[in-house]
View 1 (cartoon, one colour):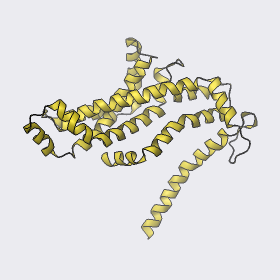
View 2: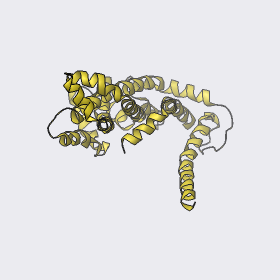
View 3: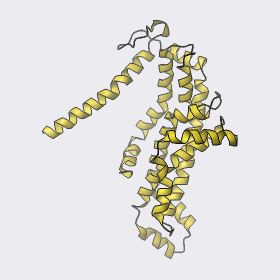
View 4: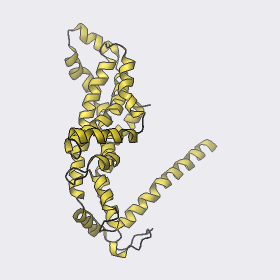
Length: 270
């Protein structure tokens, strides 16, 4: 009983640490900008959320940033999952030499902090003409999300019995058909879990959005919100918080709709 009580207390404390800032964001997003005094409010007052959202969308290209992020998150995560599925199949099923080396060659990118990639990526993108372009943003998001998606799919494909692929080989099935007709349908849940994780990461990215883009037609929504909260912004913190709430809706909905796939993905990575 003591161990269970300690776990319950720890879970309650962790939940409180998450709920308190979330509560402050919601309450102050509903506060009209004219009534905001600089100190965060703890309770709801006037209904100003619609005006704050309108100010966020008119003072900065938040709407355009949302559309850009939809493109980056959907296209980037989809391409990354496809590449990861192909690489996972090759490493776990096909007779490649030294599969462990191939695994670490792909997965090693997740070991280093992402900040270490900023300077060479900025320089390389500027020289290649990819800086501040949608193609460049999609490319960098694909490159950054392939290793983790590969890790998830590789862990799943290792659980598929080898007898299945051996029986398919005896029947004369080639590698492409084996991948498309057997392993790809079996890995559907793992692929969807990896896609959801990568979609969420791309949607919430601020670091690369600020570094590799500058124009409103290219910048993702988090970078747009960062501009909205800058020193030269004409709107107050309530409008910024309201824009952040709008930007968080897709990922929150995605989580509740596909909650079980998040749980499955955590099991696959363990």
